[in-house]
Amino acid sequence: MLALPFSDECFDVVIEKGTMDVLFVDSGDPWNPQPSTVSKVMAMLENVHRVLKPDGIFISITFGQPHFRRPFFQNSKFTWSIEWSTFGDGFHYFFYILRKGRRTSDGWDSSEKLEMPSICLLQEELEGEDYIFRTNIDEMDC
Image (cartoon, rainbow, N blue to C red; front, side, top):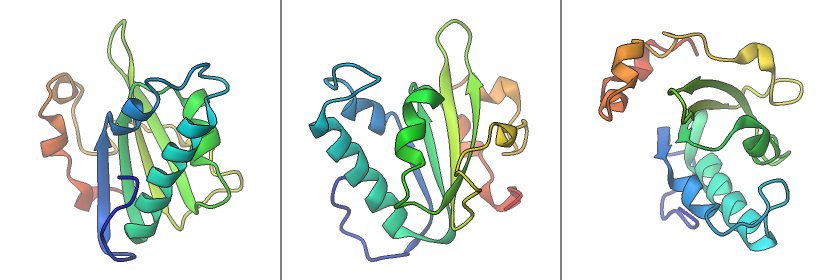
C-alpha cells in the first residue's frame, strides 16, 4: 500500500477497510500525528490516487473520524471530492467515498455527506461484515 506495484490509472475502484487505521496505531497525538505516520499515510494516499483512473473511486472504511482524516484527504496533491457517512451504535465507523478528478472548492463539503442508500445499500446490510460485497459501484451517481 505504500508502494503499489501497479501502473498509473489502472483501477476504477480502490477499497480499503481499516488499512489506514493500522498506520495510525502508533501515531501519538491524533491531532498532531508523528511525522513517520504522516509520511506513511500520504504515501498510501498518493499511491491510491496514482493508480485510480480519472473519475475513479476510492472507498475508505475506517474508524478515523472526519476531523482527523480531513487534513490528509484535502491535501493539494489530490483532486478528489469527498463524501462520507457514519455507521454503528456506540462505536462508530466511517464510510468515505473519494472521487478522483472531481475536487470541490475545498475538497471537503459537509453538504456532501452521503445520503443512504446512495451506494445502494440498506441499513440492515451495513450491520454485517459482508455488506461491501453487495455494494454496486455501477449504480453510483458519478
